[in-house]
Image 1: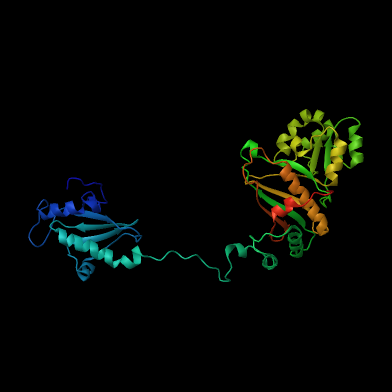
Image 2: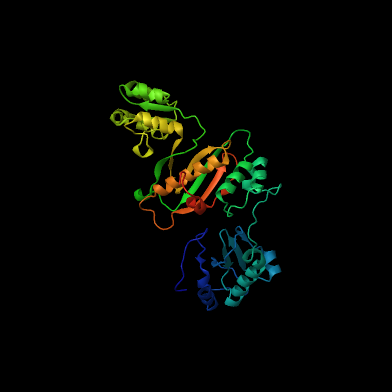
Amino acid sequence: AHSLRRQYARRKDEVVLDAMAALSCSMAMASGVVAASGSRVAPARCVSVSAHSAGMKSASRSVSVGESARRGLPQCMEMRRAAGGRQSVVAAAGLDFAELEEAVVAEADDDDDDQFFAAPAQRAVRKDGKSSKEARQSKRFRKAQANVPGRMNAQAPMAGINVMRENATAKFNESAEAHIRLNIDPKYNDQQLRATVALPKGTGKKVRIAVLCQGDSIAAAKAAGADFAGAEDLVEEIANGFTDFDLLIASPDMMPKAAKLGRALGPKGLMPNPKAGTVAADVVKAVGEFKGGKVEFRADKQGIVHVPFGKLDFKPEDLLQNLKAIVDAIDANRPSGAKGIYWKSAYISSSMGPSVMMDHSALQAMPKEGN
C-alpha cells in the first residue's frame, strides 16, 4: 500500500483507508503482507477500508456477527457506516480481495433503493391548503385579489383606476398609491432619482408644515398656511425633540443654524433639502405649493418609486390627472446615468388593497393637461 492516505480513527490501532486504496490494501493482505494464523484469524490489529457512498446519510452503525452471517459475510469482517456518508469495512488480517469486494457491493445493493434514489423532501402543507403567503392575508384581501386581473395583465389608465377603486374594501378612506419600477441602480450617483411634483388635484391629506426663516418672513409664512414658523427659537425646540410636523421648510440663510438638526431630522426624512424643494428663498411660495398638493418622491434601493396620488374618494378623472403628473415628473427628472429602457413596470393600489398593473406606455402617451 504505497499511495495510501493515512489518518487515525477512533482507536490508535485502526487505520482508515480511502476506497480508492481498497485494491492496494487487499492485494497486500492477499500476498501475505499481513500475516494470518490458519483458518481462524486472530490478529492484533485490524485494517479499516473506507468507501464513500454518495447520498448515504445514515448514522454510524456496525453489523453484528449474526447479521454478517445472514448477509453471507465472513465473521472476521465488520462493516460500519459513519455519519456523513462514509462506509467503512473493518476486516481482520487474512481477508482476500474477493471477500472484500463482495462485502462492499452487498452493502451498497442493500441500501440502493433507500439511499441512492431517495425521494426529494416534500414541502410541508398546511391543513387548510393555503400557502404561507395566503395564510398571512385576510379574507377580505383574498376576496378582493380574486377580482383583480393577473399581475401580468396590464390595464388601460382609466380601467386600472376603476379596478383599484372597486376592490378597495377597507373601512376607511384609503390612499391611492403608485409603485413604479425603473431601470436604475441608485447606488450610483448618476442614477439616483429624487424630485418633487405638484399634483393638480392635491393629495387629500392635511400636511403640517414648519418653516425656519427670519424677520418678516415668519408672519408671512404663517399667513400662507404654515403651522409653525420661527428662527433660532424653533431650531432649539426641534433640537429638544419637537417633531410635530410633516414637512420642514427653511430659507437659505437659516441652513447653517439648522445644520445641527441633521442627526435628529435626517433619519426621519425631515431635513430640508434643495432637491426636495424644502430649501427655498421664497418660503411663502413653497408653503403654498406643499399645501396645494406638492409631494416629494425618490427611488428606493431597488429603483422603485413609491408615491401617493390622492384619496379613493376623488373622482377617477382627478386620480388620473394626478397619476399623469407623476409620470411626467419621473420622465422629466430621468437620471443622466439611466441607460436603455427607463420604465420597467407600473402598479397602482389602495392602502389595503391588491395591486393593479398599469400600461405605463399608455400613461406616457396621454396628452398633458391643457394640451
